[in-house]
Image (cartoon, rainbow, N blue to C red; front, side, top):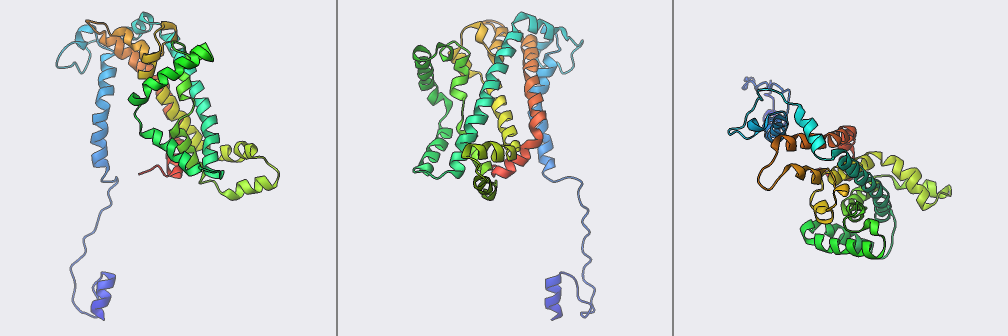
Length: 304
């Protein structure tokens, strides 16, 4: 019996009359063992950003040296002024902000209704249609860019020229709603208790009223996260604007950075200064929405 008790409890029995080995005392670590891997990895990921920031304050000769100069001999903030004056960056920023805001607002509205339909409404072919929508996530953009170009060109030639090729609307039209946004909001809507919706329906609230009065106020973390991710994607988009935009007045910030890349030489200091300026809106959006990321991702089941 004593042997059984000792085996279960893990402690030596007094009845045995023999002193067992003293268990080792474990000192709790002030951090997780994963931090020993994550901290060095984060430094590796920060190297390109640090190199960009350092180069933006160097002289052109220092930026061309190899091995790279880690500490500039003289901090040169004039690079930012020169970069802003060399290209019409103010106009590029306005274009990027306009495109990003329209895309964010349209995604929040359209993806909310589509996500609600897939989460709560029962209609014929809902499962198959949802699988088709999800399948579009697996198709790379390089496959769909030519059909998208032809659709936008047809739309501009036959429906509204402002949404056609070489107009700023061409940057908005293909991204007004995304499959990821539909999936993301559908997953979050499924976590909202159905009883709340049923109570509102009994009180006479319509389906649209349920979405605006019940689901959307409760889905603020998911909506904030989707808005931030959509803004970052739209702001960083380079390939699609490069395909459909040639006029300088309609260029966005990523396209404007090509001003510093010539055929035979690149103005590295001005290019890096322009890149740092283009990061500012994204950093502000990230810090404004970061507190909602964990809550919304955990609720939608997208965590690993």
